[in-house]
Amino acid sequence: MKQRNDKEKIKQLIDSACEYFQMGINDMKGHHRQRDKVENRFMVWKHLYDMGTFTKTFIGQQFGGRDHTSIIHGIITMENLIYTDSQMAARYNNFCNWQELETFNLDYA
Image (cartoon, rainbow, N blue to C red; front, side):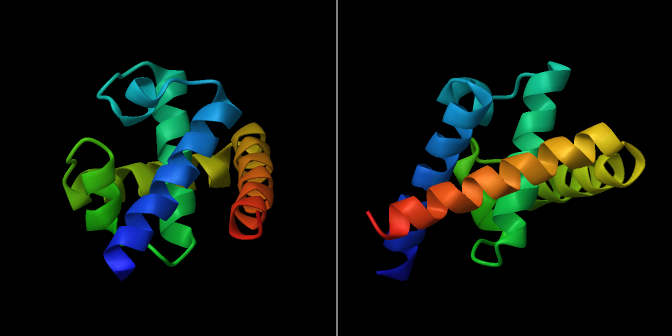
């Protein structure tokens, strides 16, 4: 039962991230290497992992069957960008704040 709930929850979170970034689901989950798409994808991965609900393996499965090491790479890359680039840190914080509001709305709708 928990895994089904996790799949539903992560799908809702990914859908809301697509809405926030104005990206299609295929761009979010795909293997596109355009910088803006990759950065947005890495932000989502980091946020999902930092929530403490989803494992790197589970996140990877939901993003086109990626290996957990791809998720680790994305999270570390995003952490380094946040640390070294104040604009990226602001973008990430804005996304997380928006996502928290969306999560609240999903939980209590």
